[in-house]
Length: 329
Image (tube, rainbow, N blue to C red):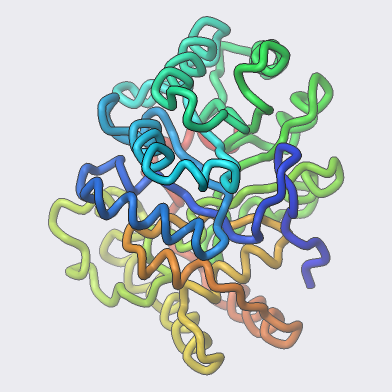
């Protein structure tokens, strides 16, 4: 059974055991400004005080930073409660990380400009590893920015155990962000990312904890996805794979019903009990409230889930094939 609790502090600041991922609030342009503000308010009011946003989560005039400035302007009293992690140094048009010193500095300066003093950058993450820049060089640039007072700390995203060790040798990261869910468990391999972070004492932040909707209990057929839904491009949602993966999703739904909670709450609790801070990204305030509710899984329940995971093979990679080269680097 998992033996590590989720982190209680990140970047030297206290965090709740469930955080909030901001990507879906702005990246698709489908959530109104007012509803996005309500969802952020629901997050902090329900204790989810670790927020993860990005410069490339939406267009330059409507990304996470624009939303954050508006939120903290409206609710300045909440600024001191939130621990803010921002991702950048990534070109969304070409899906290319740009982690040379000039690009990292430009990204941090742009984030600070957009926040306009409403909140500091507690953690800055290069969203992916740039194959043209050694991780040691990337970290050195980030350490310079820490020393200059522009960012509080730095984090890593989609890295492997070896990269974590190389980065840590230069300067310990405040956190490592990984994809982790009942569907995506690759980070838990023996000696892998989670083990490495626990060994080095690095907090772990888990995104994709509901596997893009699989673990919400809302998907039953491929037709439940709108025609223009981006998930049609993800292998796990394609015909054939969908029907196979539905078996695990249905089990989690039944398990949750027996426990008197929701499938999403089970999925989030499972991630938390791997010693990881989950950052689910619901867009409706009611879902944010649901996801922020603390539940625990006892040893018997964890064992039942583990037995089921060993029986049900998840079909399809976690990202479209074109993105694979940028993951786990």
